[in-house]
Image (cartoon, rainbow, N blue to C red):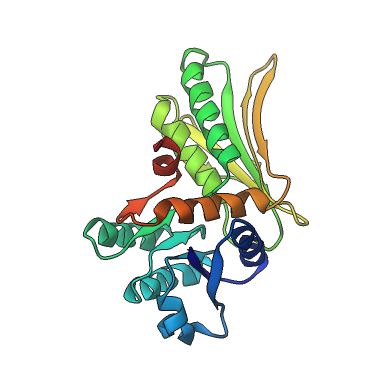
Length: 242
């Protein structure tokens, strides 16, 4: 399969290594200094493009790929306002996008376990939930896209949580609010923890990524799965398809 890379930072390099290792060809690489290559024959030959860039660049990157007739797998987070409009384009047949805030299979399992725990906690009001995410210092958006997804998962299954709110750990959250904290340090690949705390004990569910390799593998697997499909897709679609 011919894969184009949009974004050639840390993730771009790891995705390249992973894709080549799985027998694919990198037919084009687009970064900040050669965006004119969206119009190149090499890019147009791609079966799919994998996009990991910045929140302020993602929407334009996806639209330019659509204009070239190339479907996109995107792992960029922090551009939700534009994402909904692009999703509607895909549903109308005007492009194909596979988007996920996190491509790790482990994170998908963590989310499933978290939803189950949150549903159990409906019966135990003595426990109060909180969510914390930790990432490397290069990550610009906060809370992370994965943290937002995890928070929305909890809201969907819990009658006790109405919405999430970013916090600095100061004031106690209002009733019905899930506090979400973030930390940026070193080269941490990603840690997400949900804690249910009571006066007598705490229950904590954590996913800790050891490196970015799992994200890269998931993105390449998504590109393989997307080939020949049209529309808007997420990890749930890929995981649930036999």
